[in-house]
Image (tube, rainbow, N blue to C red; front, side, top):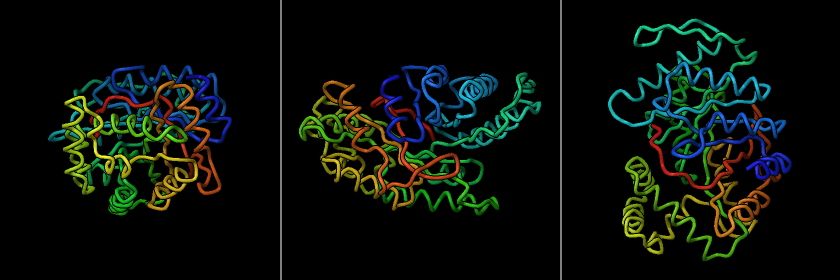
Length: 322
């Protein structure tokens, strides 16, 4: 992991996003990786608001930000969807932002909390995961960024419009909200095992209702249904290739760079390269990173700019994030 992240920093990637499901805990992992990096932004991509109490999330975020010299991006998601999920996310963001600024806050249950270490000198950016239009608009209203997942370029364009709607309704500048999108990628490897690895990842996510709904919204309902059936039957060869090619980056380097550029042109400020490993995970992940390292076709990104980023740890199980 350290080698992969250091390689990403050395080859020009601007940020690192780490998901959290049933594997490594995000904040402690980012704190460890902060010691092995110098300039990479370090993002939770994402942690859910039900995974830990709000004070614990605030303390963890402030700690990682302090250890990293102000490089944290706090990515949040709802966790289980349902009535009131986005309202709870809105409240969580409001309270977390206040607590991270050093303000005393009163929780919904009446308990009080005040962060007892010095608050970050620069506000920690808060990003929201979003799969549906309501969550996209909410990100535009209250967040510093939005992190999309399993999207075609056309879905990115749709999401950016919803983010702009939310920002304008809240009297904010839409350009102040960074649009990021995870893009599953496997580049420069043999075609058949590459397609097999991406088919397995796509089938896994198509089996999850929230992602199925998003695939349906992209006009990929039949493909996602067949993918879910194939994944359930452990027959990934039946996952439609059309689904994979609609939402993933694969092929040789020029093809992959062109595919990544399509996400930029659709409105993604920050494409997040999400390497899907095959055979030897280390070498295949590094191969994808080298192939998609920042090119003139993709502008650089920093806290206020734009460009490519990295999720370096392969496919993780799907989590519902709003």
